[in-house]
Structures are given as C-alpha cells and as structure tokens.
Length: 363
Image (cartoon, rainbow, N blue to C red):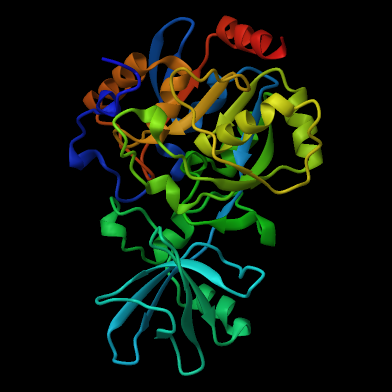
C-alpha cells in the first residue's frame, strides 16, 4: 500500500489500551526501544532510559506550559456556553481567539457572562469556525483563567472532562514559568514521563538537556481529511529557541528529540542552522512524513499516536511506515498504554542513515 494514502496509516487499537490516567510514579511507564541498525525491539521501563542512550547525548525538550483554557459561562438567557481559549494573552486589538460551544447560533455582539464583574463579547467570526472575543475587564481575565478555567485534555481521555489531578498530571515537570513559555492547549506528552530522578541518572552519563518552546495548538487534534496525505494542510504553531540553547543543541553529536514538537522545531530550523542565532519567535507548519528526510536527530522519544494522525506519519518519516506499524502492532500485543497519558517509545536511528542525511543536506 502507498505511503501517501491516509488509510495506509490505520491500525487496530482496543479502547481498553487508551490510557485515562498517567502511570504513577510517572517514570514507571513502559518504554519500547527500537534499535534501527540492529532491527531489535526491547521492552523496558522509562526509569531505565539512561541505560539506552550514549554518554554525552543531548536531550531537546519542549518546555511549553499548558494553560487552563476551558471557561464555562452563560448567555443572558442562562444557557450554558463553553469557551476554549486558543491564546492566553490578548492580541494587539485586545481580542482573544477562541472556539465557542453552545446551543443555537452565535453572532457578532453576543455576550457571554462569567461572573458579576466579567463578561465577553463576540467581536469577530472567522470562516474556519473560530471567534475572537473581547473581555469587559482585561485585568480580571488571568484571574478567572487560573481560578476557574479547566486544563484541556483530549477527547479520548474521560471525554475531555479534566479535573484537579490533571492540572499536575498533564504538565511536564520542566514546563516554563515565563510568559513566553506558557501557551499550549495540549501537553508535549513525551516529556510527561520525566522525573528529577531520571534527569539525575542521565546527568551521571553526561547526558544534558536543552529547551525549545513550541506552543502546541488545537491543530494537533485535527484529523487528516485528504486521501492523499501530501494534500493535507498542516496547522502552524509558534516556537522560540534561546541563543544559548541553540548553540548547545547544534554542537551536540547525538541529539534526542523529546517529542514530535521538539523534532518539528529542529527540522524547521535545520536548513538555516548556521545562520540562525536564536532569540526570536518564529512559526512553522512543517509536515514530516515518508518522503521527507529527517536530518537533525539521532533518536526520537515519543508516545504512541492515533491511527491516521500526522504524528504517526512523522514517526514513519524516520523508520518507514511498515516498520512503524509493526512496532505499533507489537505494542498492542504487549498491551502498552496509548496516547497522551500512555507509554513511550524510543527510536534509535541507524547512525549510517543519520550521517547520510546530514551529508545530503550539507551539499
């Protein structure tokens, strides 16, 4: 079957294997390790990750922080309205992009009431189904976000209904505290497995870490609708890398992308790595799939992704679709836990393949 057909990325997954809560402790999740050069599969636990990475390796992690973005309000009639904020901070017009869920039509000028002191007004409607709203008091917005808003979790986890436990569970331990590091509406889930103990054991092998910041957007949940995946319009996301982080990332000989978001940042910047200095907010809509050569990494650490998703296609760009689906079938047979709160997979790429990709890019 062609690598370009959407249906060729389908696999069967029992619903019982979709993780509804994370493993506790989080580093006790399982880890499937695939060594491409030796074509071997090893089944381990995440806390043993340091044993499978070479001394001196470099982890590249996405430190974007998920913000509580689901707000519940009501119309003047009393009817319930749910707001899904797409950005934590207002744009230059003082407006917040969002999605709105409610019964009945929504139109310009409609009001959504949150408290006695705070309401929002619909100011713009987009053709794609989104909205831009203006809050009555900007000074109160961040208070209600922190105190009343819910953490967004995917619909396959408890039908998307988060609770207080998710505020901690659906966040990496290294998520940034700076304003520019907070802005994701979904967690970079490959990083959820890390604990301070794992980082301590990695450091014993001189395995260091650097950060990129890519704010995961709602587009990460959007399905591919085109039968030919090459016709898919990939969503765009904003990212940032500091000059120091970028210098250290580029100087490493063995880079491990922690998660698909980190890999998308690296591949977006890699063609211009010699000129890029870091320190500016950029945007990417890169779509990695078979036929697109990955050049920036020696290994990928990632969770198990949805059938027919762009993330599954990204993994396939590294080791091929057939091998990817073979590994997924193995994970299903061994009853690994899937998706955001599930287990992880480490792909150790064939060094000869990595070297060849690097040489082809430099020519």
